Amino acid sequence: MEIILLGPPGAGKGTQAALLQEAYGMVQLSTGDMLRAAVKAGTEVGLQAKAVMDAGGLVSDAIVSGIIGERLDELGNDTGVIFDGYPRTAAQAEALDGILSARGRKLDHVIELAVDEDALVDRITGRFTCAACNAGYHDRYKQPAKAGVCDECGGTEFKRRPDDNEETVRTRMAEYRAKTAPILPIYEQRGIVTRVDGMAGIDEVTAAIKAVLG
Image (cartoon, rainbow, N blue to C red; front, top):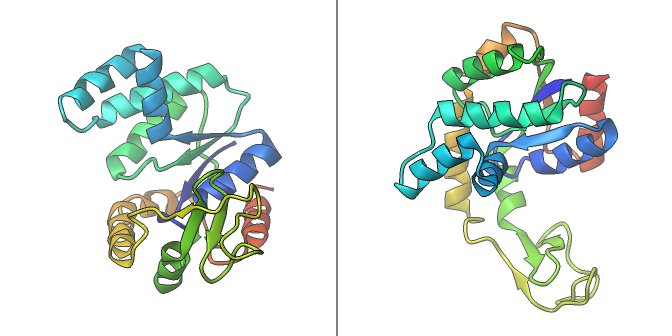
């Protein structure tokens, strides 16, 4: 099974992808992670990407497509995949069709985690983590049981991501809408798009996605 998870930063794609991997034995393919792994491994496409990045350039769609192809070849056709962060443009969507088709695969579902922008801002700007073990907390929804002490490891230092502020979150939301708008109609024409309430509880979102996947 091949699926695309769509949703702005903070919508819960990473959380849901991890749960789907566990439930279905699928593999999450994040282009950023794959890019770093290919560069580190020194694959043919990874070396091309490294040369571009070292020169301060943006990695082309062709290089990203090559890295996805390499990763799919490693996995073999009996392993389903979750695409996270790709495709972002109509050209990438077309490229992905070619990559999958060449390997006897096709997209089964495109699942968008729909969110309310104001609620998402609240969700993201309030989050913080333990500096020692990275356990996650939130100002409003999940404070440590004992104030100032991590529930998991007893650490007393916490940190926030510098980009978890309202201005940045709203900019990322606008970026997501601009990039996603061109690709959703492509998949809607095929009848494979489903929207799930990304603001629901984690278990509810997982159950909704599983109902789609069957």
